[in-house]
Length: 271
Image: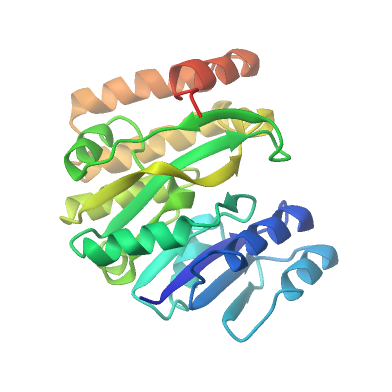
């Protein structure tokens, strides 16, 4: 069962990160039929060289003249994906060698599943020091319930049906919540979800990532996202108020406290 891999790259990615991510795709026990890399605006010559080093007939590099943001970049990229099944890959993460083999085997025996994810192991910025595991619910029913308050999908692990994504309106501009917003729309459209209860991707998730989840700008992103869910009647007003209280409170914590909160309260620390 052939599938595409979709990755977006932008100026803040390092050549080392991107090379590591691409290598993790090329070294899979089950190779994809196609890799689509969207370069979201101008990047350094070194980063361009790192991408071109792996260029081949089954790789499509889509260069955007200016930075348009992750949601728009992915939506452009999806138009270049040739297969019905598309696997997401972040440009700074590492897919474990049997990720695609296990996911595609599951999808082959469960064709009713439209979106399939898995667990992630979180490391420091150099993927050297293990920090925690982000565990997410497995069944469609539990994912639906969980999604009302938190994102039940680790986006960098997801394989989805392209046709179902397009029916839900594709990726849209929703800073920091592009994937979460998409999953909610797909769930509302009746799509079925599942998460494998195994680690499939190693993720860079150090102090800098936690830092980006705070401040007044991020609070504005939270408000805009929750209003979208409220406007589409995905959540109730009571759920909106609860989510805003929790999310904004965490975003306004000093970074050192927010980091501790993420590790101890929002993750399962057993690898």
